[in-house]
Length: 206
Image 1 (cartoon, helix red, strand yellow):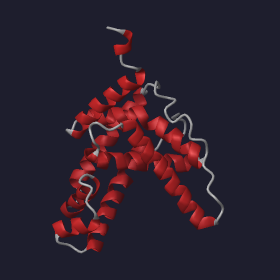
Image 2 (image 1 turned 45 degrees about the vertical axis):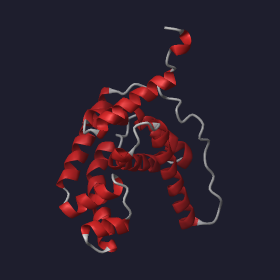
Image 3 (image 1 turned 90 degrees about the vertical axis):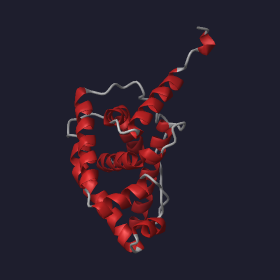
Image 4 (image 1 turned 30 degrees about the horizontal axis):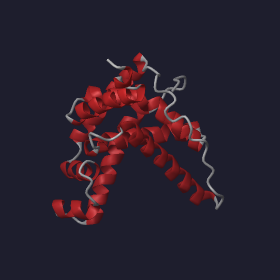
């Protein structure tokens, strides 16, 4: 093989991610678990650099992966998964900072340096992280299936199909406020049961 024909590390990583995403979109939970294990520490580090608070970074990391789980089906196969994931992470951090600023005062938001988002691509998952990811997605899969039908349908139409509240209300033949309530309750139910598995133990290193 000619040197110029070889895949770069970045291209190879992208191809692996694309294969994992495709498998996850077809219901292979192991593939989704691998993506979480691969990126969880880096997402947490990215958020921590922005919010500068460990506890908040942990909570936002949980929310980011919950969002990724319910929205993965709408991700385009030819997209850059890492870029998409880190965009969600940075948006979550910025949203938190804006909310915190509004609650406190009018001082300008100071974001930490975002350099190095992808600087840990070679970190291998530990057995503990692999087990945690497996438990997480088994739990989430079960919780989605166990939701009341109206909540489950509303959540999937919102997060997977990308429908707005009015469109969902039309499909379900329910008021918009009822649809919003279904989605809120579904998210809360899933998050409350998944957070204990996503939250790192005190001595765990990201």
